[in-house]
Image (tube, rainbow, N blue to C red; front, side, top):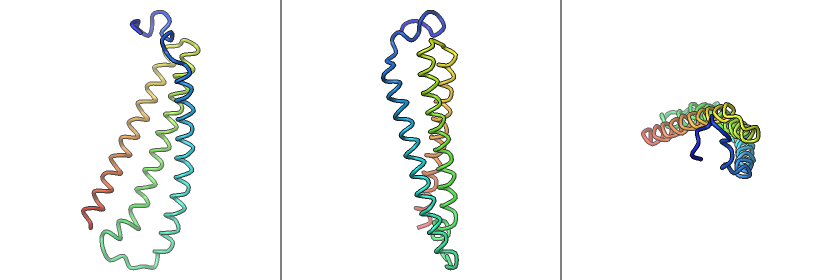
Length: 137
C-alpha cells in the first residue's frame, strides 16, 4: 500500500479473510475471558467467605485474602473492557474494508489503541500486585 488512506482505494492490498479470522479470534478470547472471570470470582467469593472469621495476622495474609480479590476484580473489569474494545475495533476495521471508508478504519484503530492502553494498565497492576506479594513474604 503505497497510497495514503484518503486517496483512491486503500483496501486493495488488505487481506479480508485475515481480518475476519482476527475478529472471530477476538470474540473467542473475549468469551473465554468472561467465562474465566465468572469462575475466578466465584472461587474468590468462596475463599473470602471461608476466611471471614479468621484472624489474618500477617500483612501477606491480609493482602492475599482482603485486598487481592479487589485487585483481581479491577483487572477483570479492565480486561473485559479491553476485549470489548478490541472486538469493536476489529469489526470497524472489517466494515471499513468492505465499504472502503477510511474514517471507519481510523475509528477502528483508535479503539484498538484504547484496548492496548487498557491491557497495558492491567498488566502494570498485575505486576505491582505480584511485587507487593513478593515484598510482603
